[in-house]
Amino acid sequence: MMGPPKNWPLVSHGQRVRTASMDWYVVTLGQGPALLLLHGTGASGHSFAGIAEALADEFTLVIPDLPGQGFSQLLPASETHLAGFAQRLQELLRALNVSPEWVIGHSAGAALGTYCALTQRLTPRGLIGINGAYLPFGSVAAPVFSSAAKLMARSKLLAWVTAAHGLFERPIRNLLKETGSEPTDDMVFCYKTLLSKPQHITGTLRMMAGWRLQELKARLPQLTIPLELMVCTNDQTVSPWQSERLAELVASSRLHHVHTLGHLGHEEQPAQFANAIRAITSI
Image 1: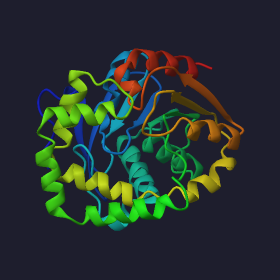
Image 2 (image 1 turned 180 degrees about the horizontal axis):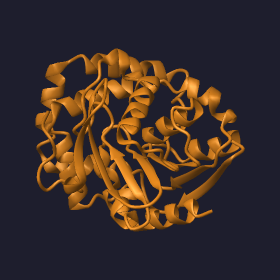
Image 3 (image 1 turned 120 degrees about the vertical axis):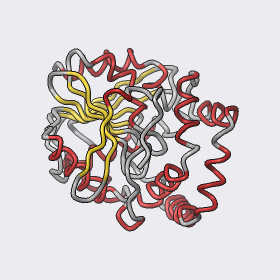
């Protein structure tokens, strides 16, 4: 399996880790209490590079590419769901001999981290969600959305065509802008690289098709550990109302508004998020 290019963020800290069920690409760096960082759908561990560099003197950062995305192995469609990801994430952390004190997730990664805590796959001291995608789209939209993603995920031709389209810079920049964020040149380079990989396209579509959030929503009121909800007010991908609604459902949660930034705000202004993580985890 091919790894990242030589100029990929934090590539000098990356390694391949083989567990019983899959082959991972994982970045580990720093020293101190362990933080597990989980990226969102369509991204990779590169999404946390700026935050990791800012926190490496105080924490050990563990940043995997989730199954089928970035440079980690693609899973069968039948195993691409919250429970399947949670099981494999638990296996990975055992292989690394890491027990994270906090789990930090962006978008779908926030839902995954919360599911892992609720099902005891992981036992962190607390959770931090950045623009978390915790709740289903809705009873009407969700089945249609999922069925369309399943159909597209079966098409190898679509993956190759989409990957070829990813070689053009302007559409990538426009795509990132539509999230409410202002992309940097580094962000464009990383997403352009990812979207030129047919496996990444397939993995993203399978994740979209298999992500069932109804069970997570039902379990959320049972959460007892701290859930810190960081929500960017200009997020055009996951509406801020999700985190605002979640703050009402989960007694152990707190809401933190981040003004002006979009869905990829942690990539736009990593120092701001690193400072917030530092403050939250010190409590």
